[in-house]
Image (cartoon, rainbow, N blue to C red; front, side, top):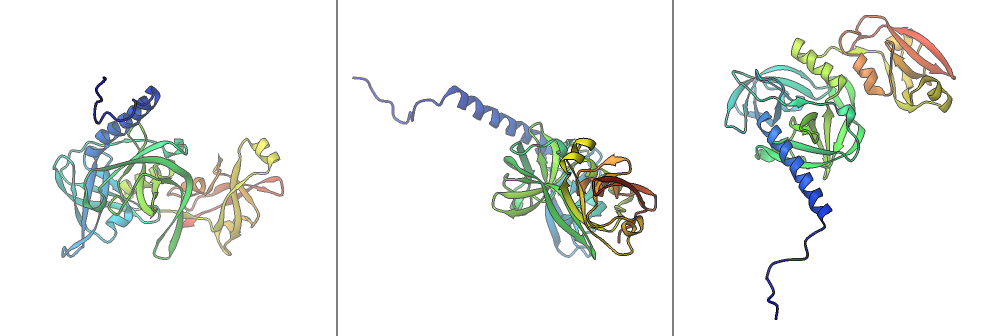
Length: 325
């Protein structure tokens, strides 16, 4: 009589399932090992030093102590402390903050850090594996994994009376909790593609993308401590091009103008509701994020060519952006 072996469980899973599980675990483990040394737990203090102002996470960008985090983590703080997984603790000093993108830079004084490799969120695809590393609820170095649930989401932000929509926000089902703000969202190769910013619901986290526009923002923060933005004075959103125009121009979308503010640079240039913006400064634009990228810094006070589709005709106008706020 054959003897049974207790606790053996069901038959071994198929080889393909084993390989898939091993591959998934291998990727997440490798990304975690690469990211954890670069992600710090931030404790921010009030200017008077009486009690903690806020907490979150930060990601090392340079060896000499520059970290990126969320603007709402450092809001109102003049000092802070960064603690890393290797036990290193450093005093923080602010470098610059931009509430309208919810991004900020701080510097860990005297630190020698292991920076992340920066990727490009513009290359992400829905369903792609992403890994979040941060310090939720005080648990340092926590790792969660999920997929890109959606791209092109919008996140409303404000600073005083100025309001802005952060475009192309990444939606993920990787678990995020309070304290993850300012932490890393990385692709399967461990490259930083987003800064976790908000928990919109169970299984619904949002991250500010690291792309061409946010790179400009971070460069401005490092250089000037703030971001100067141009203002045109339009309200609108991404709209598909008519089929004939899409074939002629070789692109699929543009920015549909819904409203033009009276007395604004856009009004002075002749832009009108119903126009479809397809190019700015000689570069094609497919959405509001492309236009916002052109409005950072150098565009202020300078003539800017705006190409619009108006009743199936291409019209070129010249606008001069003024500084926002």
